[in-house]
Length: 310
Image (cartoon, one colour):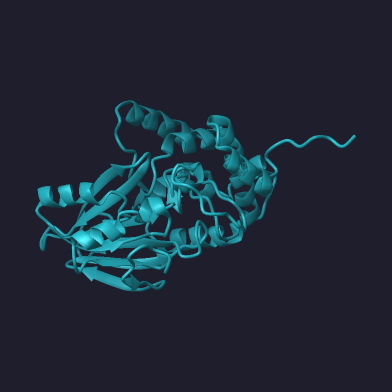
C-alpha cells in the first residue's frame, strides 16, 4: 500500500491510496479533482473509489466533477449530505481493494456523519493507516452547535475535522461527550503504530497550544521543534502515529494530571470541553476572524467581552 499526500486549497490534504499489485487506487476527500487525475496518470493507476470522511465543502467539492470525468466511480461515505454519494457506509463495515482492507469507523463529533477509515494489508510488515479527516494536531470544537452554513473562506470550515497531529476537529454537530467517545473508540481499537493521515495542516498551531497546556512536556517541545523545521522547508507534517499522539496531543491526554490541572476539571468529557474552549480562545489570539465567526464564537463560548451592567 502506497499513500500519496496531496496538499490542496489553503491547508487541506487529500490522499491517493495505491494497491501496488493491482494498481487500483482509492482517493480520500477529493477537493481538487484535476490535480488528483494528474497524479493518477503519472502513477499509472486506475482510480475506482472515493472515500469521504464528511460532507463539508473542502472535503467533497471535487466529487461531482470527478464522477463526471470518471463514469462508474464509486463515491462512499456515511452522510447523505456528501456530494455525489453513490454508497452510504455504516459503522464497522469492511471494504476490500485488492490486498487492502478498509474498516469504516463512525466517529461523530465534528459532524454527525463523520467516518474515519482504518486500512491494513494482511501479512504486511508496514503499519496500518487511519484516515481521520478531522483528527489532527490541536483540536477545536463547538458544542451542540446550530452552526449555519459557513462560506468556503470561513476559518471554521478548515480548522480540523476528527483527529490531527496534536489535535482534533471542531465538534460542530455533537457534544464534547460524543467527541470523547469517538476518540476513545479510535484509541481503544487501533494499534499504537497506526499512521494518522488527517485532513488539515494545523500542526504548528496545535503544538503551540499543546505547549501552553503542558509547558513541561518534553515530547511537545521536541515535536514542535520538528514541526517548525518542516514548516520552514514547506514539507507536510503528516502522518503521525497514534502512539506519538498519546505523548503530545492534549485532546488525547484528558486523563493526565497536567491536562486536568490546566482545565480545572477531572471527568474526561469536561476536560475536553474546557480544552476546546481554550483552543478557540488561543486561535482567536493567533488570527483575526471574520465578524460573523466572532459573533458565533461569542454565542457559543462567551469569548468576547460584554459591557458591564451599571
